[in-house]
Image 1 (cartoon, rainbow, N blue to C red):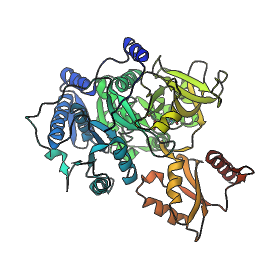
Image 2 (image 1 turned 90 degrees about the vertical axis):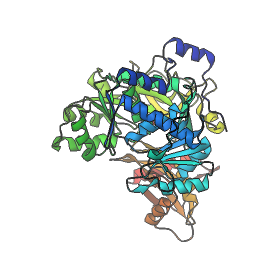
Image 3 (image 1 turned 45 degrees about the vertical axis):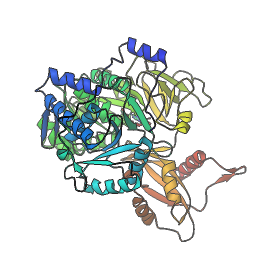
Image 4 (image 1 turned 135 degrees about the vertical axis):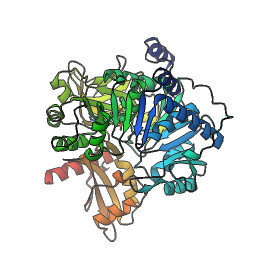
Length: 539
Ligand code: J2J
């Protein structure tokens, strides 16, 4: 099995420790500390469950024992695909307690993505909910087992069917739980937005990740009286760590898991639990702004609405305070590390017109032109970053590592940004060809590969188009061959490919040919740019 690692050069690691960013805590040690300090404080609310910190810890320990008795061994990787339910937290803390390594998949992922994660991570386990949103994950698990036999253990929250139910895990009282992890070890694998091809796996250590959500919780002023609502899918890095569920639990706050981010589901939870802070992607924020004025639910407990994952336009941002009566916080982050926040006491203009500034004084930010030279202050350029919680490498992907990191360890974010005189970043766009569809990142290349497998497709180029609601939607330009397929049929066929549904192109446009230059075929990047340009000009 490929060992997991995430290594900062010794001098950097020494500095990050000396400055108190990396404090030697682990997921298990911080949960133990909270369970000791605040045993009876409500920690997790989800569905029918209401668990105190002591209960959460006890459940995590039982799950840890059960998984080890089942046959998983410390160091094994386990793909976790759970919706926003209380068990998400007992399960992942259980995995940490057993020194098992979660690999976070989103509920929307299907066979293509899950087998990719299982292969790349060399997973031995797969943890699912029986069903969610009308989809039966046990059927998916059966397919995964057939395609990746190394995934020996499937554990199901709910009715196990052919697999082991979480509630039926052996008690394993005889099992001694392992020592706590070394805090510099990789704690889990997060997945990248996937700007080229399939998602890459992001190894995050206890030290670096705990720093990022501890500092985030401080920036968001979380206390044990705060109540954090996880409205977005909790496996995503934003609701997980910015400050997300982990930052909230770290601060001793209560976490409420909403099964859906829709106002119909989230508003009653805000009213019932006295939610003080939550995070949304821009299209959902717009939906909330639309629904709030006429809701019967009392939203007055809400103090902070975070918006991030994609650009929140200034004019929409301005409406948050007057309509919801709470402070907007813009969040510009990435699963690879760097997270920027507007601060709660910033002036209104910075809050509505920037995407914030980095968490850490030791987040190094470079803004470079395409030749790698710094752009003049205040001009737009490519954002590169390095720091105490930004990875230095993806897991097991030499090609991506060579492309995505400079020799001195800066991560090329692919984002194009400007910096204001006071160090705030304003996202201008991006250099890479992915589609940011309501915060879900889709790789153009990955979708083109699928389209090319259709017999009626000669060539395909997938681009992002501006979309009033989604921010961006995906559009596939297709050169047909033979009998031209219908757009709807092509989309329906894409749906059968076993991909997350959000990756199916929103729009298909047939064209006779792609332009070529005198020297031959233009690069895919130029091709996509010119197709997008021509389409928008014609519209
Ligand atoms: C414009 N683009 C943004 C923003 C992310 C907190 C918040 C978000 C993420 C996330 C995250 C943006 N304005 N406010 O992990 O911890 C785009 C950029 C970025 C990419 C990262 C977190 N906030 N983006 O969205 O790994 O292009 O993380 O590089 O999914 O989303 O995507 P992801």
